[in-house]
Length: 212
Image (cartoon, rainbow, N blue to C red; front, top):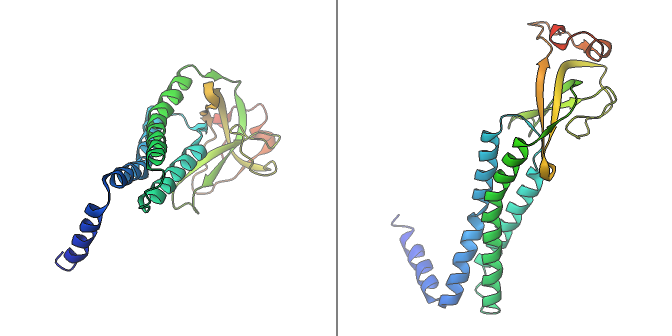
């Protein structure tokens, strides 16, 4: 702490020497820089409130929005320019309010859509586990139909010849949100797990009776 004190004191003096309007701009930049935390909170509140796995959750646009807010905050935080200060403050305040609004509207829209979601017909699928970051950050399930398409709309390659079987139902809500509920799964095969063939998974046998 004693070694860092001179540099901290110098930084504080440099901050105090800035005009008040520049300091206000940089405070807004710091707030915008930290605002994506509220987006993450809104996302996990939604995940906690809705137990069914998402088919479409719009996480990519949410992450892009947060990244742009961080970049804009960093850009203005490092600027001591006196040019167009009112316009820059207005833009930072608008971006901050939009981010905070999105953090509230996202869970509201998703939970409202889920409450009035429309169920589709039940479908037999092969259940495929996809990893995040080589499985270091967990993963998620994708459900492939007999023709190779998936209930989630994600491309996973050509139709599998065998795998783990699941009976699922898709729920479609407003604003493009969707969820996939697993109704039945094939039984685990114990220590020796034999994959289930296509003709069995997509046949007439009950899914719960299949063992693989």
